[in-house]
Image (tube, rainbow, N blue to C red):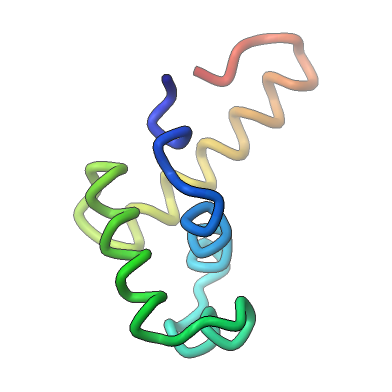
Length: 79
């Protein structure tokens, strides 16, 4: 199982917005959830991905998306 598969659907949604360099308040407004909930999701994302910060999570997300898109185009595996 790829590490990103351990994230819930909502964690994926939060991470996608984190990767756009949004604040917790902006993420909460965009997703219709409370800031406290955003912080909880971000904390769990950081733990699950094994990174040191939300920046690390955002970088990992962008790299994963790029690999996934490349592999889709070339027929490879995004592992």
